Amino acid sequence: MSTEELSYLDLSFALLLVVGLAILLSAYRLGVTQSLLVATVRLVVQLSLIGYVLRFLFASGNEPYVAVMALVMLIVASREIMARQKRRLKGWGSLGIGAGTLFVSSFAIALYGILVVVHPKPWYTPQYVIPLLGMIMSNTMNAISLSMDRLTSAVYDNRDVIEQRLALGQTSREAIRSYSKDCIRTGITPIINSMATAGIVALPGMMTGQILAGASPLEAVRYQIMIWILIAAGAGFGMAFALRMLEVTLFDSRMRLRLDRFEKPKK
Image (cartoon, rainbow, N blue to C red; front, side):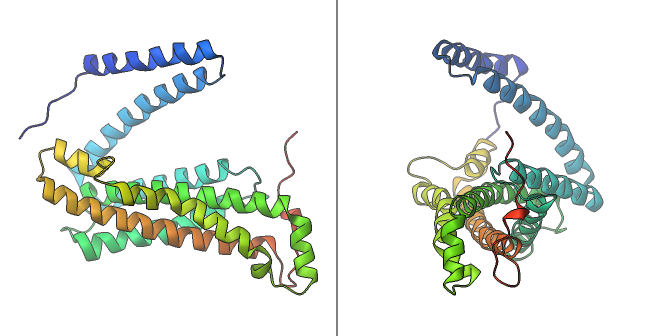
């Protein structure tokens, strides 16, 4: 079964819907019309460029090129985690934690999936490595950024309560445990909901793409099950590691809360 090709003219008809939505939002004076149009332009440009990059990678199959692409994905995702923080750490703190946790979680989980579950030959085949790493990293990035933003905000907003707990003899982990649990719950809940409703409420993206490309629905289902398991593991382990790194950063060896490690709020 072949896939129906889309021309740029076909896409232009789809873009008419965005224009209509922009007009509607403008009428409501929500202040997001420009953001919608900019995001649409970025979507078209970025995906068009990545299409050429992936075509080159798939054609060459060169291991160093795949490594460079993975590194670029890591850097961009790490910066995105830092940009989403309301209460950022000074210097490169937020970026460092984001990059470290993504590397430990996403890269390790993706490597496990490639070597143990899928095991293509060669193992660095870009048709497998880049899509799997991208899906795991994007979902892990969202979970980590949500949990980090929630914890840093909770620690800063409840600093008096936390310092009282520390004064009463609690450890730093005990003082912020309730906030950490809430952060992990916030980050993992969307993934659990997506897993619970997959195939009933909606067909997941990877499965849909494979079916549209002509793959067997049963084969597409097996790949989708695998990727959701890897995503859940990457997000869960990534959040746990990120929150632990935040705890080490925000408290010193004498269990004192270090508010000076936050950036000053912008006026």
